[in-house]
Structure formats: C-alpha cells, structure tokens
Length: 50
Image (cartoon, rainbow, N blue to C red; front, top):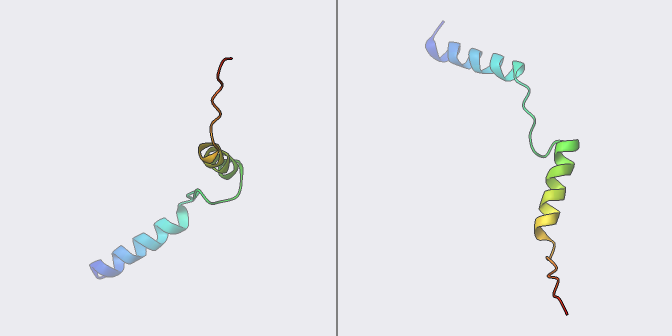
C-alpha cells in the first residue's frame, strides 16, 4: 500500500471512530452557551444609592 493511501485510510477510520460534540449541537451545552451569550449582550443595570 502506498503511503498516501495508507494515510487516507487511517484518517477515514479515525473520523468514523471519533465522536466530537460541536458547540452548535442541540442539548444542554448549547442552551448554556446561548444563555452566556445573551447575558453578555444584556445591558447591565447600575444601582445608585439615593
């Protein structure tokens, strides 16, 4: 087997085995990410004493 074909074969096997969660996938991680983003964008209130 040529080196290039062996490399391609190993890469395709690795991608089939690996399960990586991306940030945009549905679920609790995504909901937490959206909540953090919305919290950062919300205007902050400043409380002043009278």
